[in-house]
Length: 37
Figure 1 (cartoon, helix red, strand yellow):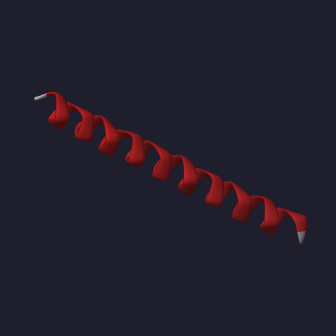
Figure 2 (cartoon, one colour):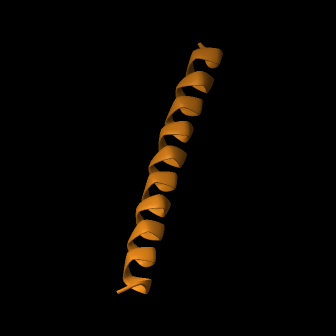
């Protein structure tokens, strides 16, 4: 039970970090586009 909960939390963390990374990528793309306008 404890291990299952641990892996569930791990999955949530990974999803959270991926979402954060995606947001950063989008922000970077947006900033680069605005720099060359």
